[in-house]
Length: 236
Image 1 (cartoon, rainbow, N blue to C red):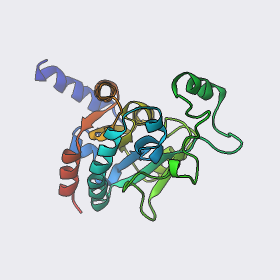
Image 2 (image 1 turned 30 degrees about the vertical axis):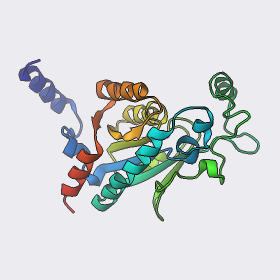
Image 3 (image 1 turned 45 degrees about the vertical axis):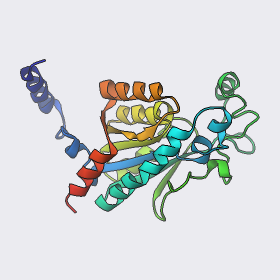
């Protein structure tokens, strides 16, 4: 495709929009309007002996991610990007959250997870943050009960109250909770930036499919190095 049609599309978009477009990655991730979402970095999804490990899946990609993420989180803090830690809670006395639909899916696919194996029980090791990935005092923490962190939570209100326009997506699992939240954010008119090496899936092909899907329909894909560089150069 030549540059001419692209320029025409951009000119048309500028005429149609109600506020200036965030056209470049530096514009999108400017700290004043950006939140870093850290999704589900919890023992059940990352640790040996957690739910996913007990399912027989390989958690080493999630554990490797836990070694990379602190650098990005610290860069975000220094630049004034809003860190938002998102956690799951599913199993609880009285079962307030697990529906028949959820449980039927679990019976077919989760090898005891959510039925005979509790998942992310509040106050238990299974729901605790994994390793060094944990909020600091005063950080925003959003608790969800579905893959999508907007579903039934205060996330959207909290982001809009702070003037957030862009969500930088990190965490696990790339193709489930990260992608579900990214899609929901795009549908609520947030710019979506997914950090390739800031996310992890248990199967490399699943991770790659989400990157392709995000690029085509929901946002852009970046890297930890690129984001850290941009935030290091951001005006203080």
